[in-house]
Amino acid sequence: PRTVPTAAQVMRSAVFVLPPTMQVLDAVDALIQRGISGAPVVEDGRLVGVFSERDALTAVSCALYEDDPPGTVEQHMRRDFAVVAQGADLYEVAEVFRDNPVRRVPVVDHQRRLLGILSRADVLKALRQRYRHRPKSNYERLQEHLALRHGD
Image (tube, rainbow, N blue to C red; front, side, top):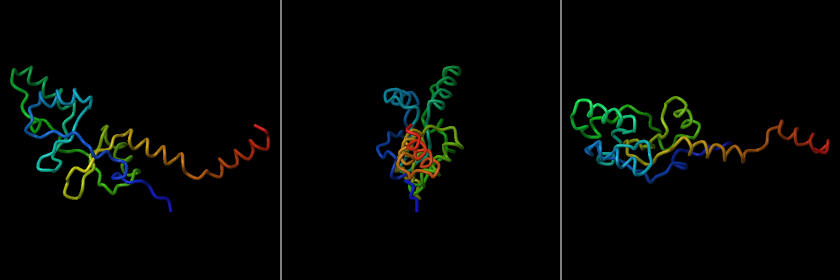
């Protein structure tokens, strides 16, 4: 039987998070400082939202236009977003990335506590590694055999 790594085996568990009460401009500074495009929003250990550069752009541009302060992360974060369970295999995670225009997906337990995060690159790297170490197909073995017979 072929075993496929799970989200928990590949995820990064050290995750930068934002509190919902943080001011948008402080969150923008934190994202820029770290060179990241977004972060999970966590309150009392639970994942309650995601705040991205896109959310920040909307908040700051509207605030400038209206001449108002941009407010808090909670006022502008997305509440509807993809997550994966820690036991999801990498094929399931790849499907989430394929079906959602996101760069990272939070890994949560059944109580929606944030356990880690997976990027598209993390999943692609793990799948690539798995592909590299798989048994060769009949076609690949045939190609090698023919190359050896013909001295290639």
